[in-house]
Image 1: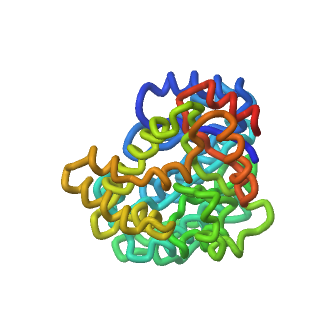
Image 2: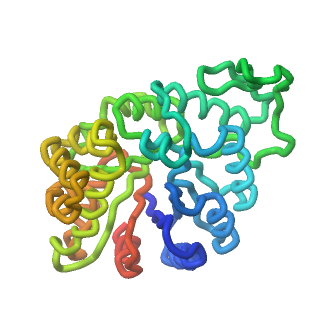
Length: 333
C-alpha cells in the first residue's frame, strides 16, 4: 500500500509546494491537489512538478462539468509530459449544488452516462489513435447540435501524449457509479472508507480489473487523546454531510447512511441546514469518524493500519498537517 497526501485547496499555493517537497522527502509516494471552488488544480500541479522529482502528482478531483473532456485530456497530457510521467488524473461529477451553483451548468439527469462519455473522449485523446469521434448523449465530437454551424471537424491531438495509458481515477459514491468506475477507469477515489465495512463496496467492485487503484482519504493524527484528535474529522464530516449538497439530494449523507449511520446522517444534515453547525459537528458519531480515520497513539494506529492493508486499498491519502504523523505512518507502512 502506497502512502500519499492531499493538499488543501485553500491558502497560499506556494506553501502547498513547500509541503509537497517536504512530503517527498518524508518518503510519501504521491500528492493530490483538490480544486472544488478555490484555486484551480492544474496550475498548482504544474508548480509542484517543478518542486518535486519522484512523487506522483494527481488531481483529486477535477469536476467533469468545469471543462470539456478534450480540454481535461490536453491538460492531463501536458502535466504528464511536464512531470516525466508522474501525473494522475482524478475526475468526478460532484453534485447539483456545486455544478449548478458554481459552474453554472445543468446537472444531468443521467450523470453516469455523462461521466462514461467524458472518460471515452479523454481516453481517445490520450491514445491518439485517430480523430476524436463520439456521438453521445452529452458529448458530441464533432459537435452536432442544432445550434452549431455544422462545420466541426473530427481532430486528433497535434502533440503526442507521453503515456496513452495515463491513469484515470474517478471520484464516485453511489453503488452504480462505483460499479461503472470499476469498468471504465483505472482507479477509484472513495470519499469515506471504513476497513470494517468493506461489504458496502464489494458488489460494486466485482468488475474491477487486476491493478485497479483504490485510493481513499483518511485523516491521520498521532496523539494520546483520541476524542480530541477526532474533532477535525467530525468537523469535516459535518460540513460534507450537512453543507455539501441539497437537503433532498446529498450524496455524502446518502453514503453515510449506507454505511450504517442513516439516522445520524439525517440528524447532522438537519442541524447544519438549520444553521446549528456546532451542534451538527457534535452530532457526528465518534464511531463513524474513528472508522474512516487513523487517530490515536502510535500503537493504536499501527494496529488499525493493518486493517486498511487487508482490503483492496492500493493507495492511502493521508490528510494531516502534522509532519510527525506522516513520518510515523511512513515508518509503519
